[in-house]
Amino acid sequence: MKNNKFFPEVNGNLGFGCMRLPMKSGSVDYDTFSKMADAFIDAGFNYFDTAHGYIGGQSEIAIRECVAKRYDRSRFLLTNKLTDPYFKKQEDIRPFFEHQLEWCGVEYLDFYLMHAQDRNNYQKFKRCRAYETAYKFKEEGLIKHFGISFHDKAEVLDMILSEHPEIEVVQIQFNYLDYEDASVESRKVYEVCEKHDKPVLVMEPVKGGSLVTLPEEADKILRELNGGSNASYAIRFAASFPKIAVVLSGMSDMDQINDNVSAMRDFEPLSDAEHEAVKKVCDIFKGLNLIPCTSCRYCIEESQCPKGIRIPDLFAALNAHEAFHNWNTGYYYSNVITGDGHGKASECIKCGKCEKVCPQHLEIRKLLPKVAAAFE
Image 1 (cartoon, one colour):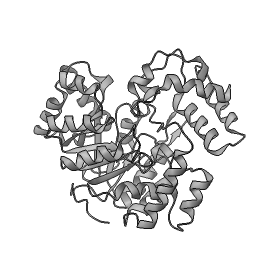
Image 2 (tube, helix red, strand yellow):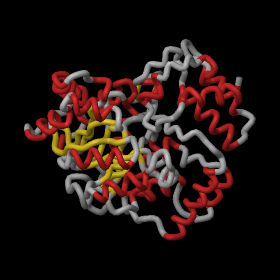
Image 3 (cartoon, helix red, strand yellow):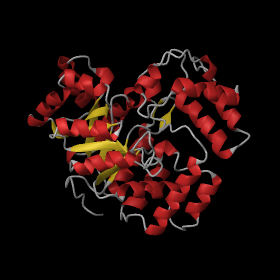
């Protein structure tokens, strides 16, 4: 395994994203997660990423129970984040941070990020002196590295990095489908990181699973390469750029662990032929006009939809309907809305709470009627 060229304490360039952990009866499956963590660490990797909002607070606790309690602190690195809903003023930040240490079962964090920065919540972080407070944590030895995660246009990132040169690392959404996407601007955002000489952490390299299960024509293109899995091409694409420090994969079962580890243990950048293949896959996706939802679930876990509409699952059903034209996508939609408090797409009251927290800036209130038209 090659050493990480930006952070020597990081083993390799694959990170374990803990937003989509294995679940059982509504709770994290500790047995499975422990086995996955063991396989990840045994393969030589050590970087874990979480945030308090992940899985309704369960992600941090799962890390404590399955990683922190089972491994010496020197065996793993942990990233956590300061997220908008959990503080209202500067005085709230330190108590929340101390709770995060407790929830994760650690005495310090290796990386601490100002979470999901965009042109709107950045103003709150400035007003509450969040950056200065977090940097104080670094001076006290409570965090090793200070950075941000980012969801907005390149010009906004340029402004933030210009105002805060103390930022050490930037986490961005980066995958081959979003690389030239005008709404995400992955390429332009990455180039701003290059301009400011900031190492990059990658989130959503497989775009919430969209680059794993591909439309038949796109899948055929990658299969003809006679190489790895669809996920491996997506993760290796992200890792192929010179400023990329770590690519996070939100793994939820052992098969994903094994596949990701296989692709990244002896990492090689995409070849010219592989780059050409993923460009063809992008062209196919462009013709499908799919909803670019990554299933991060912020719209559910942070906005508290008053109608209980499971927005990402409904969008996934519509995307499957458009991409694969399977007769059973209607059954999937029915399964999504089955259960207490799970609203139909047509029951949206257009309050806009979901749109305020959507990292993709999707016009959810306009998209849900399309879901209703397709299935109801």
